[in-house]
Image (cartoon, rainbow, N blue to C red; front, side):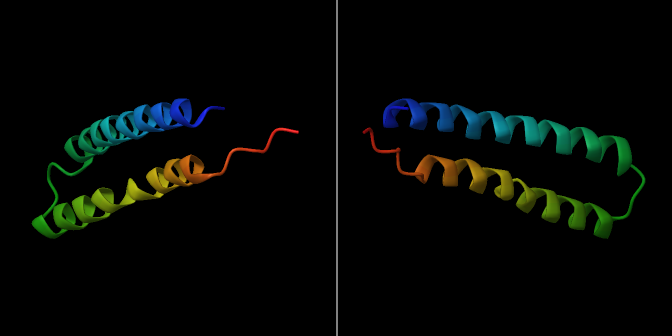
Length: 71
């Protein structure tokens, strides 16, 4: 796969990840945390704010892989 195409796909994947993750986290927070205390809110948003990094690291790792040499 050409490097430029791989970077384009990676950029779209990262943007889609952030948008979908934010929507899912927000829906979960509204549905489950409406009557919770401030510490529960703080912990949820702290953890959910950091958790998206794991799949993003996987995408970035994939972007950094060297292309296979052609024979």
